[in-house]
Length: 111
Picture 1 (cartoon, rainbow, N blue to C red):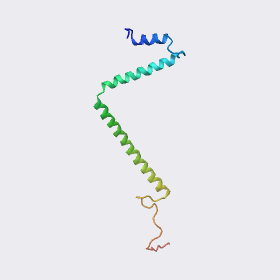
Picture 2: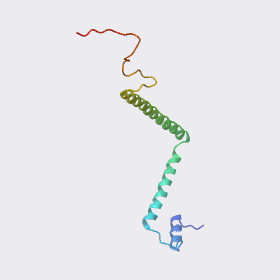
Picture 3: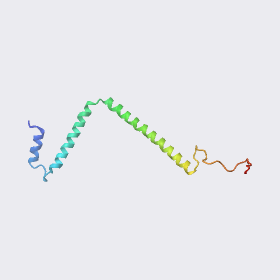
Picture 4: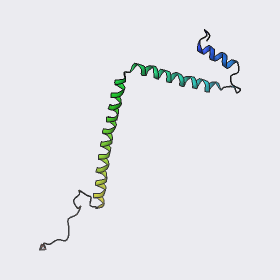
């Protein structure tokens, strides 16, 4: 190994003609920016203790489950109301209209 910094080694290897096609400057810039962002995220991740990651993951999952329960409840309510509006009888619903037939007859006087 030489005493040259890594970036100078990379620059000298590219200057020697490591690839046959010239690299687009913007593509090279974006590649190095992406690598820098990945390294920065890894560095920040090293500061976070493993227990914090574990419990924050559990908290995130429970938070999402709570919204899933809320949405499923709202969906069931909407479906029940749609059935009621259409006049359909659901599993736990009462009929939307009173029965017109039955065993008892009622006499009504009309004046």
